[in-house]
Image (cartoon, rainbow, N blue to C red; front, top):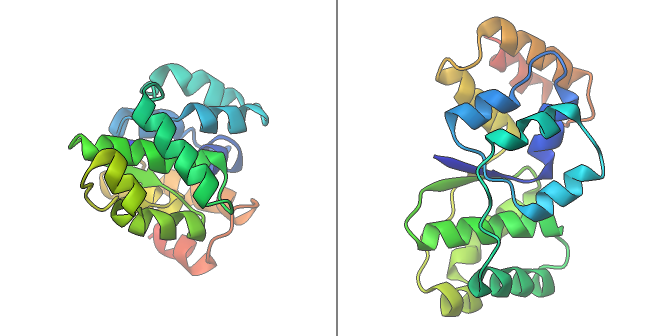
Length: 181
């Protein structure tokens, strides 16, 4: 299943979790489709892990009039969100309208709120027709899923938890405690 991450996921996996290289695991398990806008945002903060993983990522859907119309509409309508988040939502809408299962990986609450309701937006329906509700998770939800599938070990979970405790990534310490059990 395709995962469409915003900049936060790549930043967390590439910079905030130095002890375990999770990006190739994510790419191998799900297929990671990173939009050009997110790649542009992340390129301002160079990271060897992200650069090394680019070849593992699925090329994004960034051509076509419908994609451009959706992004343009989202940028003009939802000005509190960044272009990276909006491009992820646009990509998910496009894939969902084609019946291609996907998950957004969004950590920002306003972006998640938009993802939850955007399929009912009149302008989106005019451009794409009926679109099913978008599915999404966050960075930590993705890590929990990888753990449950056995793709990251208990010892790797402990390292990841320790890294996140000492990072700028905001997370409830109790969640990290449950993650390592």
